[in-house]
Length: 330
Image 1: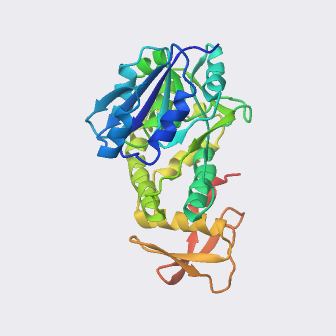
Image 2: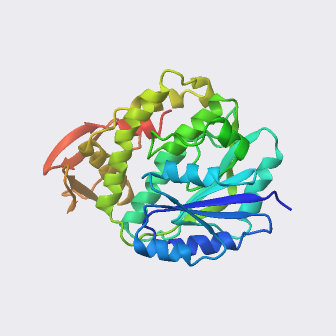
């Protein structure tokens, strides 16, 4: 029998995915578990769905941003294990049991499960899947792969944390509406905690029909801008020994410079080109447009060569890919 868990789901405008998320959590419910749903300035449909779920304690948080909503839910919780889930994620049977097993180790502070896109077809989902595998996963240390088994960063889409550790680091920082989970992870590590990554079971991210390639890239652009604030918040106290191998140092140096929208577009051209090797993509700060590559040849940006030809604004330029060094540093 696992320990009681406080499940905390936050919702904003999630009418397309919220029902499935809540149903999956209800299937995991045990007698002493707590189901908390925090509405963060929701639309009418999301609010209607939330209030129709009788098992859930529904809270309202008016301050915009997921960090405020998660802090609101945690403050109202009573159990010693907190589980944070996004409203566009659903969890499979026995997910909570597998996750909770890790907390039998008294030195574990928090952890997350693997996350996978439920719908893998289509260009947007291919991009999201590639970005997750090559960007997010490269930011982490996989347990057992290096001397330090600590996993660097949590993803609040599907994570658990001991409440005592949540309180010890004062929850999620109100400064960050994005990357609040990475900031939270680093503060746990600063305080001597350990973080795990559970590979045996996966949470699934649901497809939101309102999202398209342009909106996804724009969200990545906003995230990259926030990296500036995040980087300078942590650079003075960042102990690189936490990362246990030198990849992380150059990684942190590089990501602080990826702020401009056209740079984000270029990086996504690379991602797209790697998925579909026979085409280039045209990019500007306002749009990304598919165009056939004249020679039907694309060189893998993650291979050993340092320069790649990319079709930008109708003009072919040579771009020295920082992405290659960022993603695959030997």
